[in-house]
Amino acid sequence: QVQLVESGGGLAQPGGSLRLSCAASGRIYSMGWYRQTPGKERVLVATITSGGSSNYADSVKGRFTISRDNAKNTVYLQMNSLKPEDTAVYYCSARDGGRSYPNYWGQGTQVTVSS
Image (tube, rainbow, N blue to C red; front, side, top):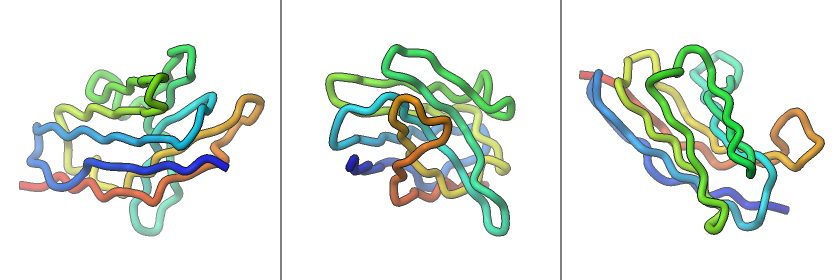
């Protein structure tokens, strides 16, 4: 069983930046971030494999950057040029190889973009 511990998040102004971090308790094939707003389903933001292959939602391409430190089992999400529509609870995710969907989740961290 892998535990995920998130940090970062909070309040930012439109156009501002925030950085999320998530540390896993063990090695895991793919890590990433999903986000969810009230009444809507959780959707993918970005993921990255242990080999460095990344995937982004179209809505964040060019603004968000996902990176990973395999030695620390930690994934980062640098969020720049934030928009009010980025406001959501962000969940760290992780999945074992061979799975198509995350099987581990963090507790969630609130990101609010507002002036």
